[in-house]
Length: 126
Image (tube, rainbow, N blue to C red; front, top):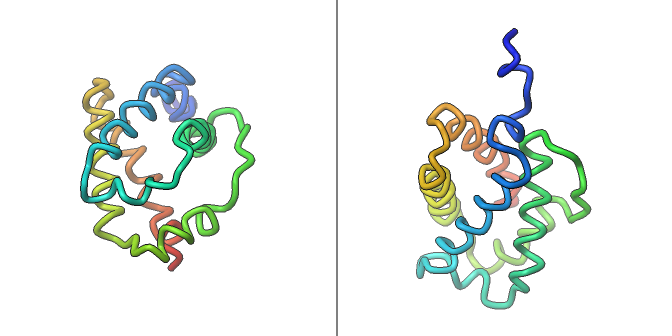
């Protein structure tokens, strides 16, 4: 195995600075999108941003400082508001666009997208 294959996705993406930049840009896109921004109307965004940074760090193989609820529990209120596959697809679209904007190599975007896609059922309470 090459060194690149043994490094976590978190490290290959650029670590904390990369995750922080991606989450900030991602939420700018999400909150500007009329198709999904209503899901964040009653959300403390400073807390939400910090929460997603911690979650993505763990999900991508970085240090575990995530103390939040499960994905299912954390999104249950949104599912009750109508969150569905079409909304998840929009989130995936914004994630990909964010990573492209940050010049992340295509293979790392695909790897990150596959990780996020793998939790679709949990997020949507399926």
